[in-house]
Image (cartoon, rainbow, N blue to C red):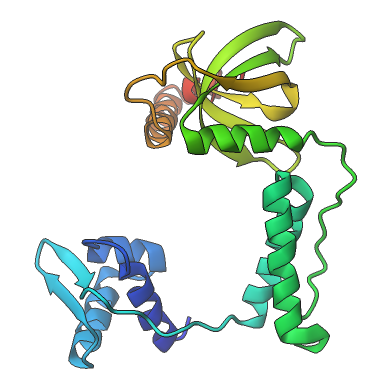
Length: 244
């Protein structure tokens, strides 16, 4: 990344955040903290509306708007591939939005301005995409879902789930959720849901996607420590990522 592009990226990363540390910027930009300090000093000397205090981090003055960005050919190609995947695999509303965004990119650049990416996402896969819309709406509304589910062994069960987030694994979607039946975080394959609809069941306390991910990280770290101590393959699934 050119240094000028990196300085602009720093301004974009600072926008909308109260405080951002040099360590955070270094991690996001994949540079050293020393480089961040040098870049921030140059931004301040150039008159950029950036403030910073030792131990507090950096922040932008209110009302500052970074200049518009332009995309490189590689970035546009990546956006095109992403739009193709969403158009093929996402719910109907997201699929339509992805196709519309891709159409706008083509309309602005024309056929000569965008090199087509040789990566495609076939639409004719028979995946039950219509279920994704119901799940997404429940996530946004903070509503539980009543689900008739069939696990890998073919065993049917009725679940009430607090839906947290959807994850795409290349050929399927899974729902990260709090399962009221198990009293634990689980993830469920969308294509194994036989029926699903909104439920009036109260949302569980202190359940969130951030908490789900924190538990997943702790579980992975514990498995790694066990693997290092025992010098043998892992045999137990991470309970947070356990699939029902």
